[in-house]
Image 1 (tube, rainbow, N blue to C red):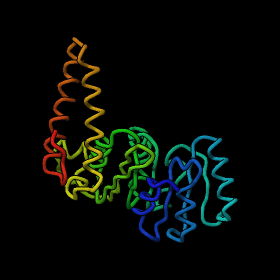
Image 2 (image 1 turned 45 degrees about the vertical axis):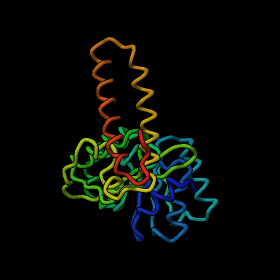
Image 3 (image 1 turned 180 degrees about the horizontal axis):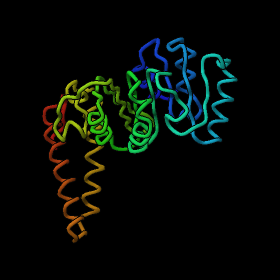
Length: 233
């Protein structure tokens, strides 16, 4: 199983009743059930092709009694209170927000969320805080040339964070995650390339975007200055 999915699984407390949304090949449900970490896992998939693949994978693993595959969009196939934990891995951050917002009755009955968003995680962190969730864990994983952020949240009031903390990850910063320096250096490369692409733009929107990205670069330099083994930039 990919390292990012192992990290997601590691944030699911033993004994949880889990729904994995956008399960694809059902790798995560098969691991959670097959390792006896969770007694029940519902694997949800919206597309017919992946749904059939998940059904076949569960049957091949002999776990039909512990992993149930359902066809449907997001949380729609779930009843309120049916599970206490929802996992989502590999979906875009905006897609994850849409899924959570679409079924408030199911969402409000959950105890925790374990989310691995594709793309920027900052807006998802803000969304969770605005809808009554607080981050209790964050993980950073490097796999096949890419960095993945995993967020674990419980219901409750969120602390206030700075814009920098929302963007990078308040718990990653507080704990000085061992991969954080390399992640930020990678992020700097991406931001620098974006600033260079915008350099030729003369419109107000391009100038505002260039200034925003330049501020983000300056903030990252400040963080790198106090991280262990920070490079001179």
